[in-house]
Image (cartoon, rainbow, N blue to C red; front, side):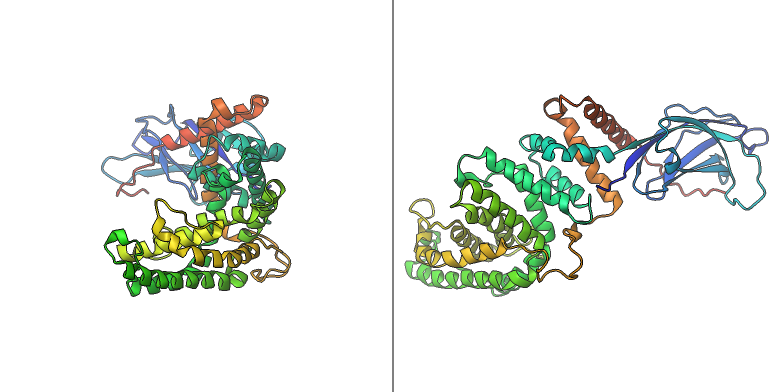
Length: 467
């Protein structure tokens, strides 16, 4: 686990013996920032060389080793450029293990090579809070805390945050695979009817679908978009419901063509699996297949289809613009045709035909659907086949790392870490581990840091320049 991140709290308390910039006194204020942060400004303290500040507390993300916080002091001038009074550069690494420190630091000039001028000292309090322990709590006892959360935090934001957090915990991607396995196993244990397994929203489906959509975007675009774009270009309108203003003869003719397009999508999907389907999707499908087979041996392939077709392929077919696969939405005629295609493909995946009732007009496709059961079984077995050592999608035979497409920069990773802490804390009455007071204290204290950080007002940039 390699996420050595945290937050640092700095209070600017005052300064002493600062430079005289206005005949006999100065009007000092401070600007504080890191390389990647916004710049924040303290209150101006007028007519003093020994300013005292109140409530000037700032929280910054610490996202790299040897991160520097810069504090620059200026003298405010109403009608001319503000005068530079001095600066300090604080390396957070020097304070990570020292708890809260109350220190005076000499102010320096901008050029450290010049002869030092006495600029006074600045008084600050500093404390670093590590977020590393969060990872240990989240993986503790086979992700027991997250399993507790799975029924209360069925949120897209939480699922996405979990995906990015754990895919960046290690180079191999093992931590994300482990949590997917534990979440899926937990849902299987809690489900008593195979027919509804993974069919409702849950944390496991949120995490897995986030992974599929993010990693599988290029696959969907390559496999499905040529056919979708062709249908849009040719304004394919294949209504098969006679109640929508077409004759029985037109419905029959359209059904023949609709079957052709369904077959075309099946062919495109089959042809793309070997060379284009990401190995991470294969591995997750294999996990689902194996876990479901232990409890419901006759429904394992259907469960894979519930993810691969119901939640991954079919949404890309009937709403490709929503996933960003195409830039312009299909018109209503093509949308209807794509929707019908997705309905038929989903029934094939579920290994069921249409019954009489709400969509009885689709029962004319039952022979076509039945004839394709074996095709889809082969597709889903192929989708569930994973071998990390001999997979054609591996660009480097010596590189077994997974989820490389989910690697993000440190700023984004901290954002998702904040999301996890915030959502856990907001549910703390129900979810925080009653047996672990240390965790309770840490999650609450770190949530308070996030709230403080959100309340910080960024310095308003002004046209006036500084010396």
